[in-house]
Image 1 (cartoon, rainbow, N blue to C red):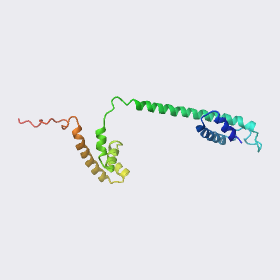
Image 2: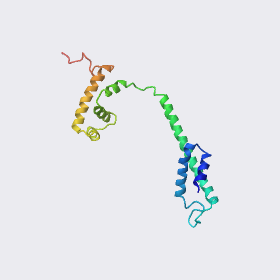
Image 3: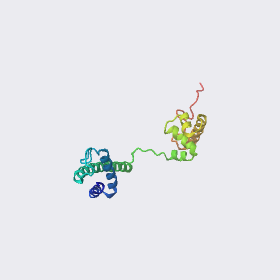
Image 4: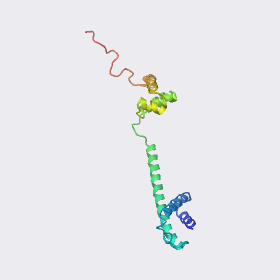
Length: 174
């Protein structure tokens, strides 16, 4: 009885793609507040007069449409903000392509173990739980993979010498 007039009402006021969503929200509100609808509440006649019911239903539809428009506006502002941040990368963005290439050279399970350890900060027992390995297997994989990554990344370091030591530094002969 009220669905068709509300559908037409919404079609004249918004994008056709949005009409069904707003109409369903409107019907949900009407159902939840059925006792508040004039002519449908307790003690109302079995066949309500549309002139009593429709104006109140239009008010609910208007409120639901306003909510949908506000939500659309928030979504659009968020998308615009995300686009702006993508267009202007941070000026000090570091190039980690060598690290990503070294990680890509690892097997899938080794790569996952390293990422869980380094990026997610998980302990070996937590990694074991997440991957189905034993804690001992995780420890061995981490040790092996860290050595492999260090070997691969060593030539790419600016100062390949051991930190804190100079090659000619040693014990004094005195």
